[in-house]
Image (tube, rainbow, N blue to C red; front, side, top):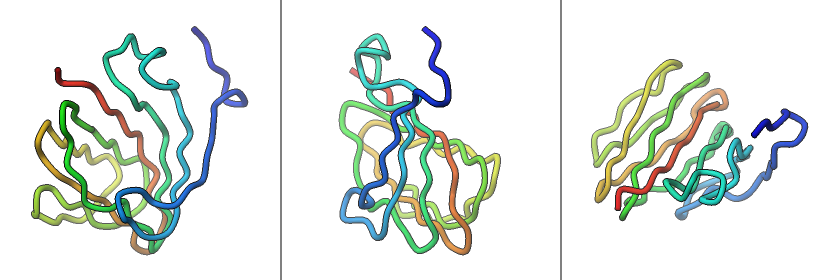
Amino acid sequence: MIRRSKDKESITKPAPFNGVGEITVRSLLNGPDEMENKGRVFAHTTVYPGSKIGLHTHNSDAETYYILSGSGKYNDNGTIVDVQPGDVYYCGDGECHSIEAIGEPIEMIALILYTT
């Protein structure tokens, strides 16, 4: 499969999980069918300044964020750290996390894979 940049699905929506503000999600692969039923999200995501994806727990899946650019705070099961480009954050099955953009947008790759 080849997906050209112009063909990617893109949606701007309220930040999920009782978050704040808006995010934009550009799907790189569109759900389980395109991911061989091994996962459900592979996306380039933008979290805008002042916006936050709310704290949420992963059940039967795990999520990885790869930070491309921006700054903010990441909550890893209650441990809060500064976000920097090049960082990788992993939230395993049964764990919780959130991310907030402060000052400039956070551009990241988000990947959710099933664990069961």
